[in-house]
Length: 144
Image (cartoon, rainbow, N blue to C red; front, side, top):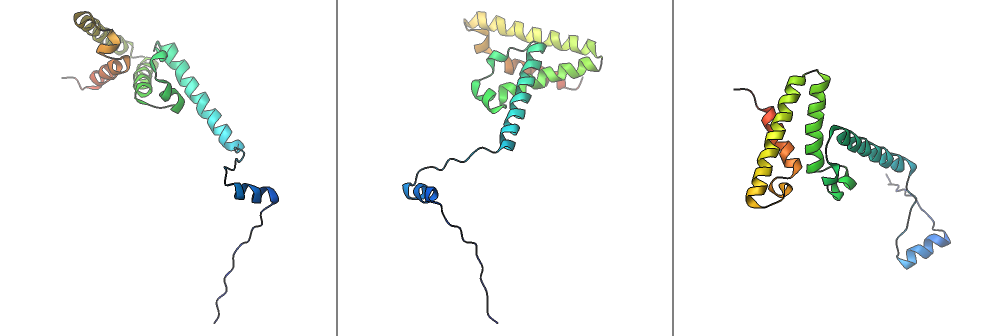
């Protein structure tokens, strides 16, 4: 028995032929669904930043690259800490929130002391995102 092969054939328009011959880039329109997705992501990031500001975080310390990507070490650390505090507050665990605020204050005090001792800025001793990471790690330890 014989075999039959089929294929699709496409013709180029004169503009298509011209673009092919020049070898330059072909710019296609951005699909509306992609624009909508990007807008949703931008809005979600803006909401996160607004929530962090309301919680007292200094969002100016977040690197530009992380803001553009919507993700990164600094952004994750700040979101983790402040979301944890928010969860505790919503669950009416105000004593625990006070303990964690005190812990963070003591770490900030240590950082300030070291900054004076070594004549450095506090952020050079320990950036804010590392400070809240340490506080969160200590808060996550089991008692005992």
